[in-house]
Amino acid sequence: MSMRTSSSPLARSERLARSPAIQRGDQWWLVTGSGSILATDPTFTGELDRFAAAMAAADRAVVDLRSCQDVPPAPRWQR
Image (cartoon, rainbow, N blue to C red):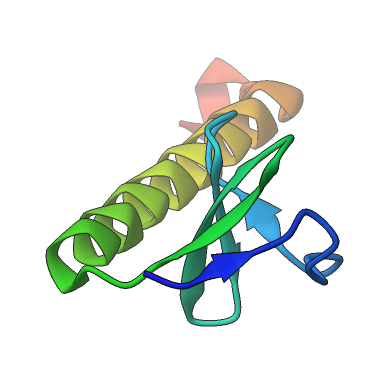
């Protein structure tokens, strides 16, 4: 694993569910107040990829459910 300081450019990154894991492009970083570490273990980063995909799917499902709630139900005669 390589070490980066907290000044590493992570401006266009996405934090994974309030965790210290941040994805920048196709790389995963573990970020703390004292610095950042590039995650290089393929098993670990694969799990992060799968978890991120599951979180994205869950977020889409919530959006879909909320959009269904915004649509008034059709009158009985149209069902």
